[in-house]
Length: 256
Length: 256
Image 1 (tube, one colour):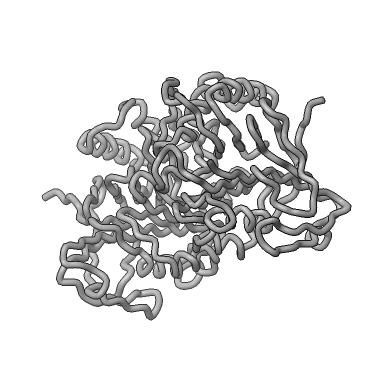
Image 2 (cartoon, rainbow over the protein chains, first blue to last red):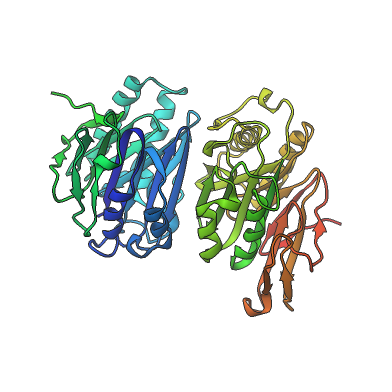
């Protein structure tokens, strides 16, 4: 299995505190030592870093722990291989261009028989079920929407495709088009929304503590999504199962 | 304008020496301060680093100068913006998936009216002429070859497309599908092939010297391509103008 980390904020925000926890789980406090990756959206562009080394011992991960890249949407993943050997092309997040936008995708779970599904335009580069599922999703989206759809259209279509894949196994994902952060969850994903009044938080995985009130303005709002809570002194909520949750401007659109 | 750097080797090879020179040209010894990027192929995967900061002062460039990533094919670029603002999405190399492979592309030059050309499946994310030209090329290739073509088919088709774009202006490019490194040159691109007996070389841009005989085996062969020679004590050749040169296993396929 693997662990996911996502962030969506209403202002460009530094993910280093949360990433420090995730990176530890890649070979130190967790067994997810088969590579890692992270995407940072900056406007229409996205920076991506991938490494088949364990994140706990990766030089590139160390750089990112020290270097304050700010972003409104981040997706990160530490991998424990089940399908697909340990290799750069099998590290998440996967990305493709569709509608002149960079779409990124990371997955936790296994999908029995996903490779029976016929692909459209997009083909996997590596051999994971996850990348195959991603290519299937965006192939279907591209067929349905030759041009960029509205938020509502995309959300409805994506939820339908996620529900179809969820029939094949565990399908916890984070995905983004640079406008929204999408989360679909069949087993577990936790999230927290931090906003004023900001407090103090301490990581689960190492003795690192931050006072968010010193790093933020009262208007800031940041949602963090993770496979397991990253901090020990905050209350994390679980995402609803079997439906798509959309994060935009630092908050989820939850349904009653 | 911009500067290009490419490498093709018959064994995974460390590019740090050459990259050190290119990185200096992004804001120190050269005016190409509007961002930079680099792609390292590792099997079917590719690591990419992009930064809109000047490479001479970039933290990520500094990491890459210290961290020995080995690769058989590398494409790097330092940018001086003419079309398209300074932004992450406008930094080269650009990349797309086609035939389940990562294709990367970097360009030096300007192409008058390229945006009049109708695109196929691939759309630009940023606003440069260069990315538009890349999307046009791979859209045409995808239309002509729904599945991965042979080396010879791809080479012939790509050369034809490059010649068509070269009518619009300066079109010096490096491009790769992870199997070959393609270079097309309308103005200037230099190259050198290093093989046994290996000697000593000194950079043009800083007082850095390397003895390749200490870092290589007698079977190693490495071709380096650059907009301007990177070393002061080696003989660099110019690439033939107006035709596609293909580098594979560390050597160019030059025609008589």
